[in-house]
Image (cartoon, rainbow, N blue to C red; front, side, top):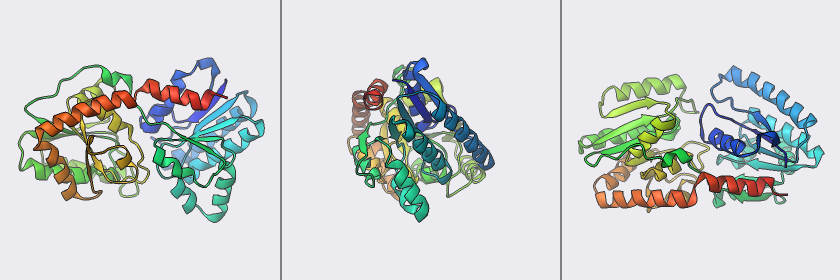
Length: 357
């Protein structure tokens, strides 16, 4: 089957671009027609111009190329959803299979919060989608408004290079790691405040922060940078590594003990970073927020309350003071990740849903 693929390719790196790129790479190149929608590193004006450019390229390929199935990763913003609506309505005239892949947790919110006239457009357009893919069984509710749509779930995955042994954990120190986009609503400042409390009690802990600065509804990039630099400069046990990739990322995760993501990000669903940390033998500390409790349970680590420095401090400390529990959790996470979240299993599931007639 020839496939029209519309979604974000690497770079820049984020969960959705990594997942889309790995699927594109798995297919035979001469059977792909790919449209890259990754505008993540663009300015606001750049995203507007970039969207129109993507719209033009996508429309031309959708109208004039031959394909049997369309696979796209849906947006949950006004600007991005225009692209999806145009794509769905063009390809629906060709009587081809349409598959949508949702990587966030806020499609239903976006639909309900849209103006009434635009909600009608979204409802009519998405009713033409044959199958939507979500990351967890519980996320099927995101498409409750489409009774005729088939909804499947495929868990996220970890890249194979994380299995290459590059670094050993230190036995006399506990390394905490934050590896995600550095934005306020991912809980980065709550984590730093919690670490500062713990650092006064335990001298064998350190915190490594890695990721790309981004804006959200809480803070601009400049505000995040300024606040983070101000806090980090006062504590030599906190190391900021910036955006890291490849072997550097693997080494960081493999040398870490506890992965901390105290997120209350509006579209948080099933972060790939949690799986990556698990396969590298990290216990997980994350928030009791949205779908995260469906990913992490007491065997994987600790769930804490979002926005609560006190709850986060207690959660991390419960692992620091109980070494047996920490090591047992680390071993369990590596085993679970290998059994459930391999890239091969992810690709096989996508092939089954997208490519089978």
